[in-house]
Image 1: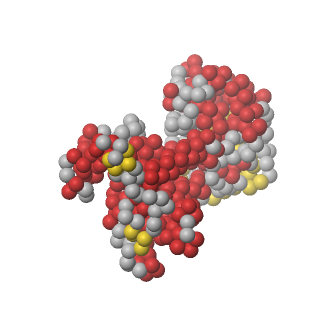
Image 2: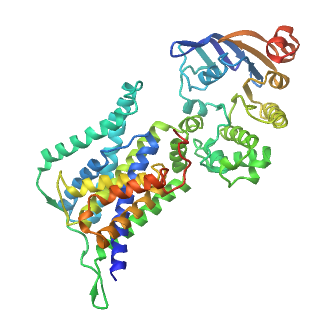
Length: 236
Length: 301
């Protein structure tokens, strides 16, 4: 098991956003965490990447305890987090946003290789490489955000609502890309999504979160068929 | 000839304001604090420069000594004072104001400590070259070799600074941390260290501004120097004119302010010395509250 979370609890002030969550994601697996607004999905993800400090519990990655480590250290351990809302820096160019992802790697040659790799995956970014990133469309920005994460050579990719605010066709593309990346780069991915159907379709593992607690864990394809899950999160 | 003189004086003074404005902008960008102690730091750096000149006899050694001293002191202030304040006053109405009030307090402390160490009397740094104006066709300009030197050094520093910011990884880290600290951290940037570095760069820029403000004036300075109060006010106003968030804006704001003041003093009245910067600030705030560099207003509110 590469990512192991046990009894993780995270508070926002007095509110308990994540309550005694335990889950395990094997290497090379794409896990989708679904749930309603306010279920604690984002908070859970932010606790995994070090942005939020957990109150209690343990996070273990590849045999190492990483609970409450700083994000800048976790990146160096192969954990990349793409935060909610197209996390690109609008004041920087596309190239600068990408280079930022590899900034902690001292090797200039490696940076160049990663840049070529990202441009191969997202040719659109290559076409717009010198533009300021606030000139990009919503879908392109999401590609850029994922591209930046890939620049840091991740082994574990944490994605927060990559479909947010995108047109249905673009959402489908982004999801397909996430699936392809997981397989091709042998990534372990934790995908947090409101778009439960889209996420479960590409995922191996499905985790349902409600009011900060895990209420269901199963193969994604099994969860899609589950009547209770369908009624609560898939709308039919 | 008078027009040219006025313009050149304005540009020289303006370039010094630009450096001071850059110091304000660097600190604002890295920690969202308006550092009123910047003038105190510049003054302290000038004393460092004075010590170097009197021991080693060369202005050209004093300049880097003042810069390094100013950078180290500013880094220390960020590491010790600012981090402590952010930790202890992180909520409630005081959180946003505490660091700014603290910099005002620090300004007073620096001035008193300087008085204790060096005394309150005027000290003097002699300019490295002549401040007698150039002569063209028998008429003498106010613009002098010294003023030309100030201008050249400031331009060189600005070019170095822009290379640092635009062409290096460190510059990318500085810009990313300023615009989006969270994304910077997620990309592996050690934002805390980058903040300290931002303060250090500001300290160095302020040191050059302090030394040049001194030698560009009559060379005298003291803890109560009016020159440094003027530098504080002008640098701050130039930064605000430039939008407070932009290095290019700081440079343009400084030049704009320097040239405007120079023209007001020459063509309206030299008695407007202290009121002119404020009137110019008010006009800019009324006409373009987002500063002369057109950053969308309120985006980061």
